[in-house]
Amino acid sequence: MVKQIHEKARQNLEDKTKLYEKQANKGRRKMIFEVGDQVWVHLRKERFPEERKSKLMPRVDGPFTITRRINDNAYQVDLQGKYTVSSSFNVSDLSPFIADEADLRTNPFQEGGDDMSMTKDTELEPEHVPELEL
Image (cartoon, rainbow, N blue to C red; front, side, top):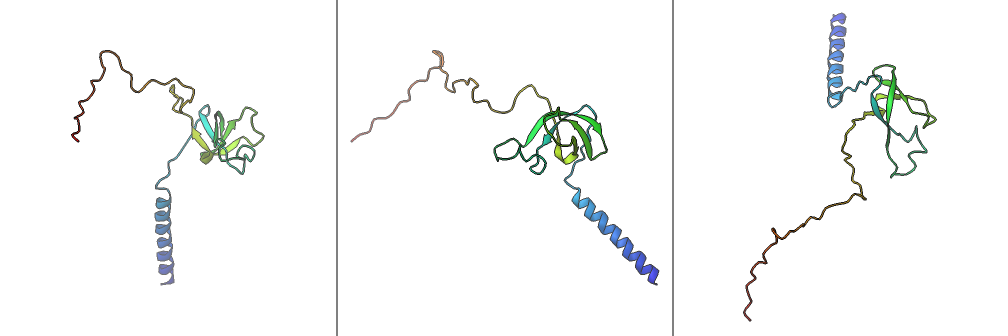
């Protein structure tokens, strides 16, 4: 009788643990990097206090190359002597670097076109405005 109660309690605990684990991992995606991949490094305040003095300073730096995979959650990154911290990072501090030809950030010095470019062919006719009677 007591063994049955213990077995039922253990089974209930296992079921609830699986349910909690499923709920906690619902929005997560597993990130696995390979040696040679390019990544962004998240500059946390605790680890990079000099790099995060101001709110306006960048929150990521890179791209850096992964030199060694310690396990699924930890990677060693080649910081190129830029920082004096340990070169091993948790996967939560790394983001994949996607090389793209087009720079998506706006450039304030970039020449822009005129929104209203008009040529002789496309000149607009003035609209007829009715005269008001007074």
